[in-house]
Image 1 (cartoon, rainbow, N blue to C red):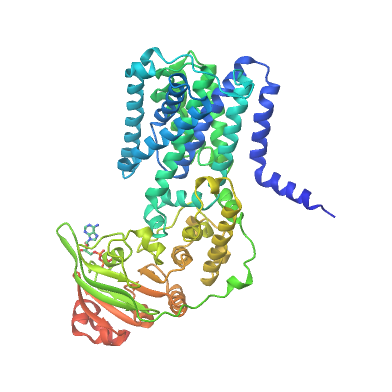
Image 2 (cartoon, rainbow, N blue to C red):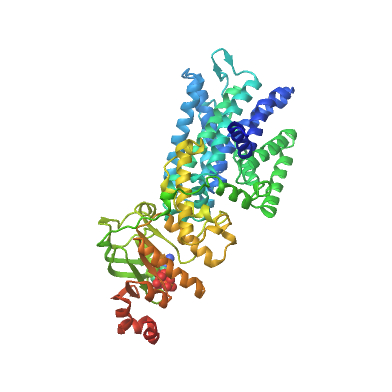
Length: 600
Ligand code: ATP
């Protein structure tokens, strides 16, 4: 008979073996290594690894490239030193104060700059790093200028003074262990999926209820916080700092390590140890090490663009493993779907217009949709159908008019707010999160079922584990309702087009919507798939979910819709039952042609 303790130990070792090895390395490194200079190098490595840990979430999980984290490193080091030396504040409090100040600065930086993307955001962070560097050089009275800032006190706990490298290594190692644990967990949970979703497809992420700006802000501040802590430890370790300790080279080196390491904290830490160790070994040959970094980066981009992680921990295997993390049998009471029984109008659009520059896409559109109905929206190419859907779920704001949903004015609400109000959608071109499994994609659709932030999620507390179970249960339910569960652990990239469309529908259903907006869901489907889609749409409607269906496939629209709304050149030309619309002269002339008679 096996003891439960042994089972737990087995599963702990199975799940957390890299982490356990890492803890052992931190504990035994100063014991085994007798060389003073190597232990000192270990401290420096641990300090840089703290910055790299935060930057991994920012760059590899979320896709934001920062070229200015040396700035936050410097703010942490200088603030902590100034508070200790000039204001005689306890070094630990100074360290916390410095970290808080850094977070405030990071927040203020984000307000105007996080709207930027890609290279523009990278350039803004580069500017930030340079501004901090110049200020540290020019504010002689405060920072000591180019001559540096000396006599920074050691950290101390009771009678234990952190003046020995060994102690400093344990301190930096302990902080690194905590944040590595947080970052490793984050990558496997709701927030990690949200970050991947933002990086992979921001539009679909927003439609799934993810507040992109807020998540970016949190991660940016989190990574700045870690850089600041690392800076403070450095200052109290070497007791002297100068602007040359915080040049752009540090930001570049950290970034290169992350790009080579990939989206896995372990491969990134291995890369950091190898590259920083190598840099130290050829310390006198600065140009040589820079050349090697550049060469490695080029090789990485050509051979394994997703970094070392894709070689050591292949994406598909890692994604499957992550997907199964919270798998369990769904409780019986969750299997049956409750049918919503609302009556009246769910949506009222009044006099809405929109134009793209000189193109009038919609003109004075008014329509209303009843609960538990399917409204088909048809019209020729360019009639304004997608524009109308984009307005209904907040991607576009109407120029005039109002939109009421469940008796609430939603005219100026944003996409993620509307997702929270249970408006879900699919897109004309399939928008999935590539590199993730089917079930992970659908789990993103349940993002709003969780509330835990970076720390609670990263520390794997019970609340966040419970959230994962709720999210997993709902995702399975959604996949089962569309008969897709057998594909749950496949990477979405490997699915057929028809299956990908179904995954998108499953993700939208996972949000448990009251209103579902579908943009040409039958485009690219074969006859059998289209028939299956028609059945699915009727089932969804019968569960009390209202559907607005934009579609060019007339047999499908006419067979499933309760009402059909017709657009032409951005204007409404008819609205009524499918039979009524098919006979309307204006609709036949503008869109249906003579085929209409066959369809009806
Ligand atoms: P389709 O059936 O081909 O998808 P649609 O009915 O969905 O067409 P929309 O995509 O809403 O039509 O386009 C309405 C009008 O707005 C068209 O004239 C289109 O060219 C124009 N339009 C759409 N998107 C943009 C854009 N981003 N910038 C400028 N014009 C646009």
